[in-house]
Image (cartoon, rainbow, N blue to C red; front, side, top):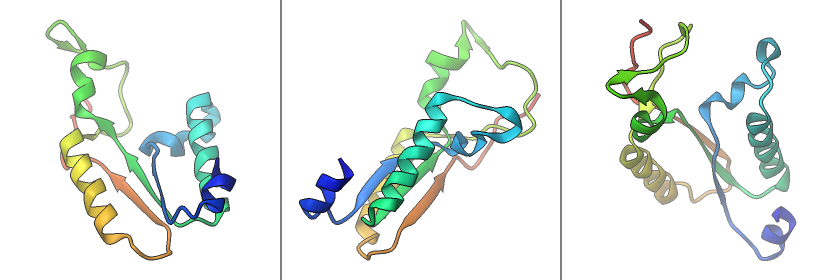
Length: 121
């Protein structure tokens, strides 16, 4: 797809990755999803097309469907780091701001997470 994007003159690629993609390969951690995200970023960068890549934390809208069991918040074990969430509406506003301001040929990366973390206990 990227060679075709070059051929047709795509001016900028916007890509939604993941903040946790950086855990791939750390301390023996291996997950195929993060491997694919890392490969995608590498391919986008190698294409030569200017890019804007977003690395959001978990979307808070996932809490009711992925983290709740009844009235309890399900967390496995203790985390070394507090978990930050981002509201999809806040994320969308930051993407819009990036679209409006990224008109040059440089690559931009944005780590996007909410300002307050869930406590680790």
